[in-house]
Image (cartoon, rainbow over all chains, first blue to last red; front, side):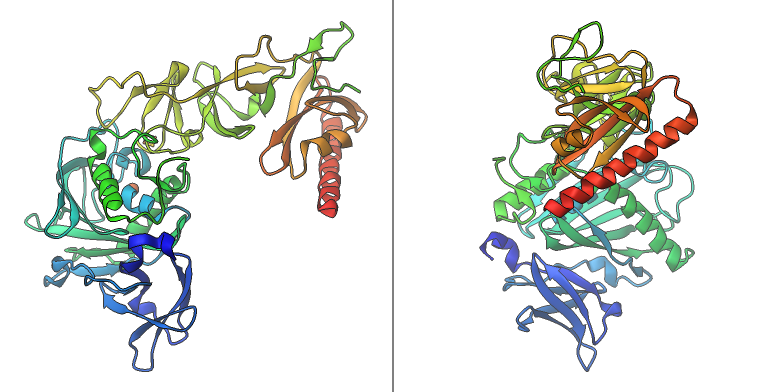
Length: 282
Length: 224
Ligand code: FES
Ligand SMILES: [Fe+2]
């Protein structure tokens, strides 16, 4: 288990709470078989391959667990408690890629015109203006702010193109939260989170989760929109070489538009979060 | 039977056919302004044709974030990566980074380039620049490509030859089979048939080569 390094003691999503049954879900967490189920009282439980109980948190519509002993509580997303938000568990999307590559893709806006053509971006509006990135030591999170990008159809509830503002937050090695312009409520942010369950170093289950101000859209439409976006991302994620995320500079060539990804990689390396990563190409 | 690995004699003129090229695809399978994946030994290739018809074989990996370039798109004389649209031109050089339209991409951003050439409707690739062009087969036209889940040697042997270029008779037609080693012990079989073959003869050839494939794969499986 030593190859799990510091990632062993982190929290990971392993199921959608409302889909839990007594029979449960057999799945993997970083190569280890686990079972997620509801006990007689309906409380989520997780056991490892030996039947040993693992720690459990039920939050954001998902069940979270850890193979180790997390020192910290699972992060919070204060916005989800604001009244009037619709909380959407999108469901699961399995991707044959490193869990870290899945998160990095989520932090990236430059691919919108090419991967989410005419939805999240479109040519010729491809320029990524300078934005701000920092590793916030007090909360130990990566933050990107003042991110702007032109979007032809920014969300299900957006009509026509707008310049959308974004903030990105990496709050756990395989979890990120993005805040974006909320067309029906300009003073607020829509919240879209990506919770990634590392099954192995090159296979993951991705659980998107949203907290939106959107009174009009049907829940199924919101879910389908997000699933369509993710299926487009999957076509890229399953075709990157190498499959593992290179943490040492040199193997790939970032530009200024990739400042969030650079900071994410640096933060991963600093913490020894290397499950799904490649260190020094052999 | 024509056998090769060393230069071989292929036609009556006594010309020799160098085999330092590897057959990788048929020209018709990569039309103008398109890209497809290919292999050369351990290398993954992006084989692509520009709008004006030029063929090229590059490493199938974008230097930016490692996306396979064979999934990319071709505009004019440029291959662009599908992930962030970086555009690559002559010699694999990056010429455009859409996220920074004003920036002239540094010289150093390059995709490794392989040699690629076409002859008799076949796309040939090589790691270095071979001294002579790939072989022509007068009177023959590229017919179809198949993948066989068996060692290249086994496929060649089933056709009665060895090496890369094999002359054989299949379904009553004098054909040339080009054998390409693929990863995981598989082989590519690129078939050329007489130019004037009628459709019924070509159908029979297809059936014959598929039967040959089944036979070789079954033998390979039995041996495993
Ligand atoms: S990975 Fe090719 S342009 Fe980004
Ligand atoms: Fe995306």
